[in-house]
Length: 199
Length: 224
Image 1 (cartoon, rainbow over the protein chains, first blue to last red):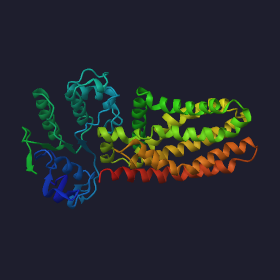
Image 2: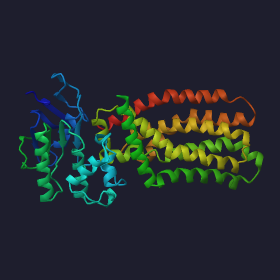
Image 3: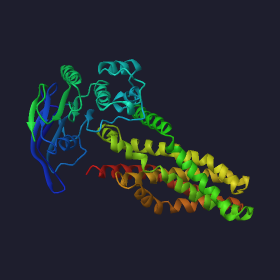
Image 4: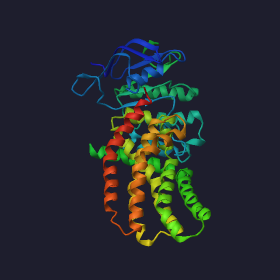
């Protein structure tokens, strides 16, 4: 089986400071990768570099295409959840899910189903009235709107209670069984079954 | 492919218009600003009809330019702050569509209210009725071009002072100001104004692809 993503000797320099260097890993369908590091170690920068938001200093990022060939450009949709969750304060919980890129063409029932899965019942509540944890749940509901090949999630377990943490672990497992992969970051290893690298 | 692009465009338009209507200051501030600037002129200069109608083209256009710049800073700043802009660039949809949608929304929440308010301004400034249509046509083309310029200014000044985008945009708005005022002035003296409108139309036609692409590049600079 070929990996969906192959990263070789990736290095990034920002403001003349080496953020990370010679990072190597592969992400296979249905498998996860956890990037462990302390605050400011460059975990977020690594995710953003892989996704093309930041130019790397050197290294190769290869994505598998539908013809089983590796390219330096991506031909499939990925999901990215950074520290800013992409939640709009002036939209309701329902609208925040309905009006995201991934939810394009999705029917109403599927949206309700996704919100129910993450335990969000007040669907007509404005996101501005929600706690950080509840806002994070909206973002997690977005994972379910469509099966993305790779999910890049920056610190998925921060600001969540035990119940939500366990829910995320189950969701990751469920999506893994559908062939989806997760690249997650954290300060310490999580309970998620994953290959781990430290930066 | 086009179906997917239109459906994405539809999502951005629906989402941003909903947000704009729930945050009324976005569209009320430029409208009120425009009306205040325009009504100050008769108060300051007195109610002489000939003086006011001769100043009307310049007054309406300067007020429209400044008012349309008021909401420029917000074109991308919220999306940049809350991470939505990252999602746009990570998705496989063309970034050009995002910028075009943002420009269209900016025009709908600032340019369109200004169009309606300009009718009040025209009455206040004793602009003859025959000049209403040329004024509206010039404002439709001009405020649209201003929204395009505003998006570029907003992208270049993202995360920095709001006044910076106005400083970037204002020098480039001079041709629009000259053409716009010339359209209304020509209609006041019963001269042919179609040439000016054609130039404004050409500026808009070239501006849509060119300025949208430049804005995409300017946005990407913020990730370097």
